[in-house]
Length: 268
Image (cartoon, rainbow, N blue to C red; front, side, top):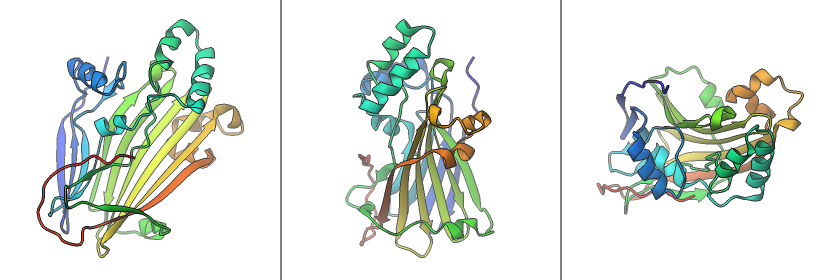
């Protein structure tokens, strides 16, 4: 039986920014089927929060938001070598191979996504470029007052009781900065643990945000020295997962700020 989720929406103003966190129920089966067809998937995650969002929008309408549908658009439906290998290992570890064959062939059954957010705006939007500048982790450790905090679950699937695939996003706002962590976490029991983190950081006196994407992954066979109790805790297991990819970007504000509402998904 699916858990019941209460709907809520919270807004917070941070200078010229409006921060919105909206949470509601899992989408209904008819909407799930329509969405799966649109995304060319046999099915979407069993707990799909299609209307949940975290939005960061400037008063001039540009900004960035995080939602489940756009995240699934970034799932690679053509299996890569790693995915096929992992799927085969997963399949061999199952008691019903004929069932898993039907799961792993048509699409990425893990829902692995490298989604980094959806840019808002039309002629006015954030300009993305590579950078060598990094997020100031010392400022994040400072004992500043937390003025606003929210965590929003975007999707979750238990992989037929053999692990978990989930995507969630949380935001923390302090007087001088805001910080966002978007986390995709995958655990296929006995096979693989994968984590894709996107961190978004903004200091109130800067005309840009910093975005850092980090992908970590390890086969479970390489984690025999790690207590299994940590396998279910993303915060604890992260330190044991080798980094596979890192992308550092600067999201610069438009030079001219004037209202121009629109929304364009960012393609990664």
